[in-house]
Image (cartoon, rainbow, N blue to C red):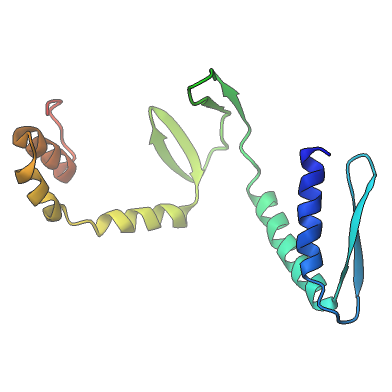
Length: 154
């Protein structure tokens, strides 16, 4: 039994949990990629409606947000692989990460992150600055965080 068969069995088990003993509206039969029978789940009408609604939401999301193609490169034992991310579609909000521009970020997500960081009170870090092992470096880091300016030295 391969991993896809195990996923099919897991799906079947979850579908069967929706069976509540009321009248069966639909029977879903699952087969693996080779066409071999995995099992079936008799479902009541309310479960069919819920599954249809959930599937519609997932399909709409996937249609509006196609997966970003990537390949794993530079992987060796004991190290995390690097992601080689293909060009993303233009438009939307941009973000720079390690000299790479990431486009098409969700505007509401960006707004939520910005709101979070606007709520951070830099003064709350002053006690840490004064208690640091290297107060000069801590002060320089604090000033860089507050002003956004950095002279390159800590």
